[in-house]
Image (cartoon, rainbow, N blue to C red; front, side):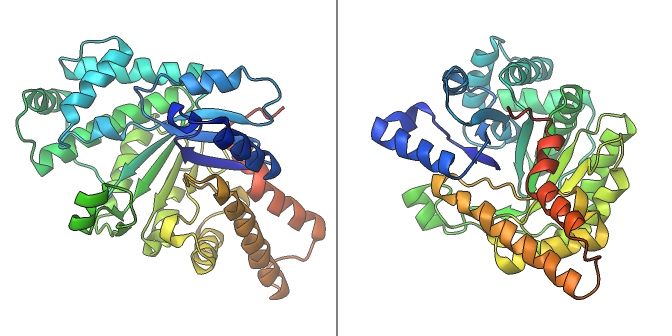
Amino acid sequence: MFMTSSQFFSEKSKESSRLIIPARNIIRKSNVQLICTTDDPADDLRAHKQLANEQNLGFRVLPSFRPDKVLNIDAPKFLEYIQTLGNAAEIDIKSLNDLMEALKVRLEYFVQNGCKISDHALPEYIYEECEAEETALIFKKALKGKKIDDIQTQRYKTFLMLYLGKLYKKYNIAMQLHYNSLRDNNSPMFKKLGPDTGYDSINSSKEPYRLAKFLDKLQSSDNLPKTIIYSLDPNDNRLLNSIINCYQGDGIKGKLQSGSAWWFNDTKDGIYDHLTSISEYSVLGNFIGMLTDSRSFTSYVRHDYFRRILCNFIAKIVLAVEYPNNPENLKTLIKNISYHNVKNYLEIDIK
């Protein structure tokens, strides 16, 4: 079983052994082999190193590269974060080149600690062409504490995302892109409880050509990494599958993936619709299956839930004589989607 989850066995989660032991038992009983956590580029990955040295742990825990804070140039604490990132990379970040070098240094550190995948949360599809010289001026403006407007924000994010995409291709890191979430809709509750407390919803991007331009820019320079694209808007299922088909190749089965039904779509109907769109517009047999970004150790049952729906989905098209009733082929198809495809996609060595 594979899962993308954050805050796994961080120092905060080690408040007592009473918390750790049951959590590990849940993981083992769920037959989990690999967990990829979500980690900031400035993270020292201390917990990962501790777990890597443990004997008989029974599963692997690898970091994922999640550089959202460095992209959010318009965030109130952006300057504070740049200082944190610079300290981690041992680089005094005073320019765009310094920033790019710091990200490279930290990604290399993550790779040394087993990183196989990155993750990006983007509220909408972005692409606003911007050359290095202009991006450097925008970054310098931010370093001086000046306000960055929406267009400058988009240009900065586009330039950095293209740079990160090139790094991911170089280091064989899969790039995850999560789009179309509308955050913190209830402002009184946000002030009271903060982010990620249940007041988010589905967003909708009206300009999917921006996604195509982003992918094409990387493809044109032979820098497009393995990419998994999620949208919280279920109306994007067919759109995404039609776009990703334009950029497959490099001898990689399903190099670009339509990520599993995510968040509000992680329901019976949501999963059915997602599987239908893949089977109609792409190749179901190449799908890497269910990945969840849940933070809860009790959510491993979602993988079992997905597999049951997958089996039912395939059974229905077989009974409708839309797919050959070959038990061995069907078993292989289900095993691949549930396990082998993602293992091969991320090139994970499970011992």
